[in-house]
Amino acid sequence: MRTISIPIIVLLSLILILSCGTEKKSQDDPQTIENRAERQANENERRIPVEAIVLKPVSLEQTLTLTGVLRPLHTVDIMAEVSGKVTRINKEMGDRVTTRDTLAYIDDKIPYNNYRQARARLLSAENDLKIARLNLESDKELHKNGDISDIAYQNSILAVKNAEAGYLSALANLSVMEKQYKDTRIVSPVSGFVAKRFIDLGTMVTPNMLLYTVVDLTYLKLDIGIPQDMINLVRAGSPCTVTISALDNTSFPGTIRYISPQAEAQSGAFPAEVEIKNTKDYKIRGGMTAKVTITLKDHRNRIAVPDYAVISKNGDRAVYKIRNHRAYLTPVSASSSFGSQIIIDKGLADGDTIVVVGMKNLGIDSPVWIERIAEQKTAGTK
Picture (cartoon, helix red, strand yellow):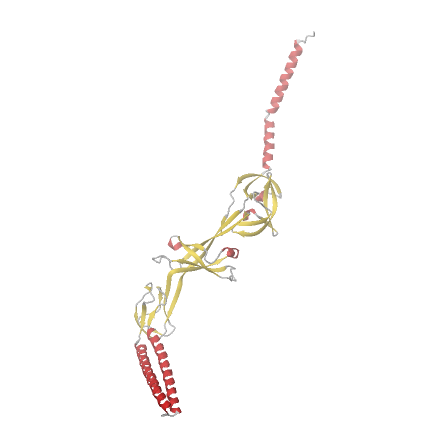
């Protein structure tokens, strides 16, 4: 049996210890650790941070905000229909009036006398007609018995017709004179408030002279212009909200009453009229600036993406779709827009993930890592 000498064993042990120490030193060497961290950093740096959303079919909603100036539902300019001097003024600017109130009086002496003469002429014409009819009845019996000639009988018939014509003429004249007399009392055809008074006591007025302006503030209206891309989503009768800054931004319910079928040439918008009901104490007044808010809804579930996520170039549209930590520039086909959302027909599907923030750092095919999954929006404001 061979015996291994002690010096050889010691030598082998030293070699083993030195080799282990060298390996541990190489693993813990700072330079090695730094190189490893640098390689990891370079690998992470190649992935571009982005924000994304996961698509799903949605029902879109948009708030359309427009401004306008409130106007009374009815504004009536009251004109003089007779000549004369103003003898009394009953209503001042700001006074409330009804259709039964007399706002002012014009001197009625001459119109009243003409009215009385017309009544007298009518009474005389009525008596003439009665006498002519009585004479005709008498002449009819005489003619039947042969006591008068045919010519005399025909004259009796013509006398009745002339009397009837005189009566109708007197009746028409009375109607004219009665109107002229009543026109000396200035009344309003609508109930409301006196917006302006253009006459004073003693003013000489002539026909078609402006006397008062009366406004009906029971309801108010304002004109707005609906953009062409929204016109198919708005209907006459649609509700809206009217906010008035002069009343501490108080909001009132309103209704879109009318929409013009013809767009304006300059703006391209479709004129529409919004109507709101006034408060019981008539706080809303004509001329106030108001903001109209219309909520538009598209109840069809469709794929839509934010407009800032779509890249347009030379008329083509594309988005960055993420698959396996890579963002691919993907062409899409868009049918229309709904506020800040673009409706996609082709190129995207339910469950696809697209980039919404960070597109400027991406190429056609880029590695990415998602910093945040944003919530898909279904509403916008225009």
